Figure 1 (cartoon, helix red, strand yellow):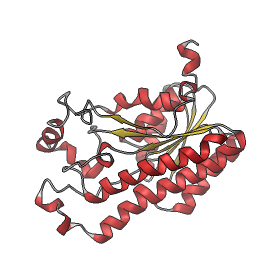
Figure 2 (cartoon, rainbow, N blue to C red; figure 1 turned 90 degrees about the vertical axis):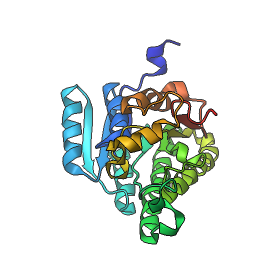
Figure 3 (tube, rainbow, N blue to C red; figure 1 turned 135 degrees about the vertical axis):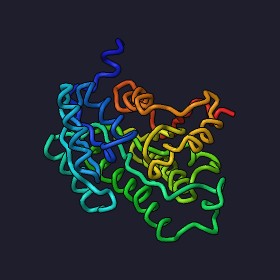
Figure 4 (cartoon, helix red, strand yellow; figure 1 turned 45 degrees about the vertical axis):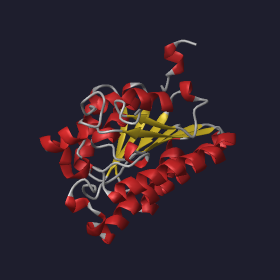
Length: 263
């Protein structure tokens, strides 16, 4: 089979949370640039509108929708509404997430300083909203016996990451197992569920902590390639997991980390 058939997503419908910046924007871009109709959602409506306008200028089909994934009812309605309007839902990227500060590598991130309200907020956004996203996506995809669900995890959920905060690490570990559970359940229905586990990428998560050169250098020291990744470097893996080429890939948690988890 030729590459253009393996990776042909023209006419597909893709739903992306957290699409106004960072990895979510990269997912929306690669879907739209390759012919999918993208429902791009984010809590920041103004920034999202700018992303949608840019993708439309490039010839993409994009619907922008302001959405706070912490509002679980609105999240569910948005996913099922998109499926109803388009008559299909081929790929859902459960990407939106937040951080609650540094990890135990610095005193402020030690367990004694973990704020319970901050912990609960991260759990709600990074875990509960992902569960609802997967739940609604499965409901939309099962009748058609096909679909791709892609969850943004983290290598911080696969191993100890002293630079990563407790709540972030715990929730990312949890979504890895959520993916495995859902993959087993949904496999007989033709729905593939996988997770992308990024290493350090240049995004604004954590209130832009990676804009600090010292923080960037600390993360880069743990990467064999010696650098942080740019967001467009995740697009190939995202396209693979949404495309026909990934028809026998499910239940996988795939690191994309410059070799950080290889040692």
